[in-house]
Length: 215
Image (cartoon, helix red, strand yellow):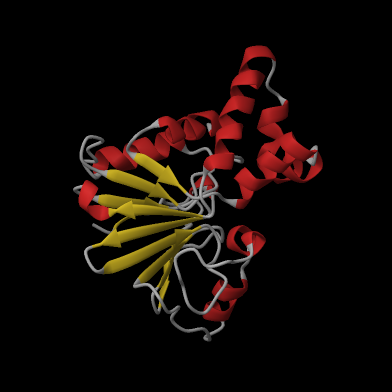
């Protein structure tokens, strides 16, 4: 699945959270602090639920919650490539080593959980009345957004070209939507430029976990 549509009318508040990387306890603490109500609110992740942090399985279990949605990050992509195509080295060297320490039933459980990542969209399209908010992991690699448009999946989960342009004083707005939320690149604080919001603040490296309320 490339695109997934969400209608904001179905929820009271919608929050977008930066890269979790196994930091489930930190997320739970942030949700309590924000009075998150799983019966009325929605949490959207910019991807990279797994690797590097202490509780990748706890973060993968979020995929079973009705109040949670996530786009696929490059770490989910690496995990899927390892299990489906045998590309283990890249994942193991980039934080996937937790998986290779599992045994027996825990290993089977992890394989099932990771297989669910294949169902994660690359792009979430959130409609809020007349406003369109787009969520992707690393970038929307085009100058104008359009629902269903063909894009390069690798650039969606890996590219840093846009944020590097912004950091060097260049860049501009992306057409076709009101706001874009990305993760992927750890930053000391969120980067807001034009209509783009980069919210991976490196929680797994001891920084704050960014939780942005968009509704």
